Length: 106
Image (cartoon, rainbow, N blue to C red):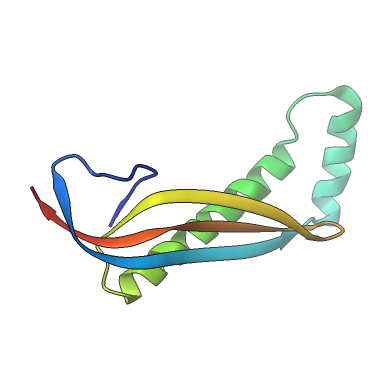
């Protein structure tokens, strides 16, 4: 599966546009991570606990988007974007979305 944020893939041509595909996840903060983040906030620096949480969320949303595209017969996804939003106090949604297409060598 080719996945790109561009609208074209070098050396390929789009032969079919399937449409929007997406994957999302909602993650809540973890009490153990919050304690570590609290102390890191006092001394400054990267909040590694939340960096890891968001990286895991992005990966899961990405994988779900790819699964959606594959289930629709796509072999590539173009114009991929990420979006986040707060769902409730301490929980956020991460959404990955793009356009599923079928490509062939140019």
